[in-house]
Length: 72
Image (cartoon, rainbow, N blue to C red; front, side, top):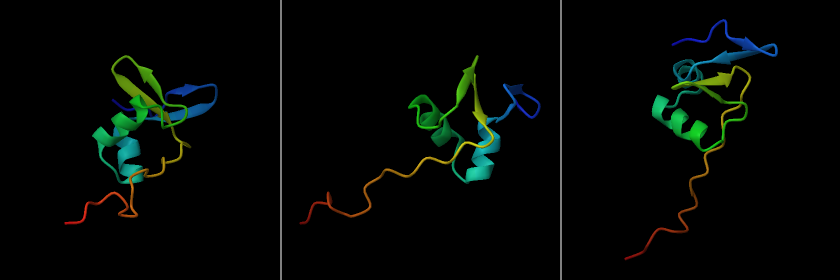
């Protein structure tokens, strides 16, 4: 399902597939981010998510310091 022409309050919305291609991450990851509320303005319409075209990609909150890696 594409949301090329879906506009609400002069905001253009894109589908998860379109955002996936734009941000370079998987469709499933975007679904999780939407359900966690980490993408501002994302709206669920039936079974589909509509994401504002100007939404920013959320930061990666995984631990990158290696602080929690167990040493043997």
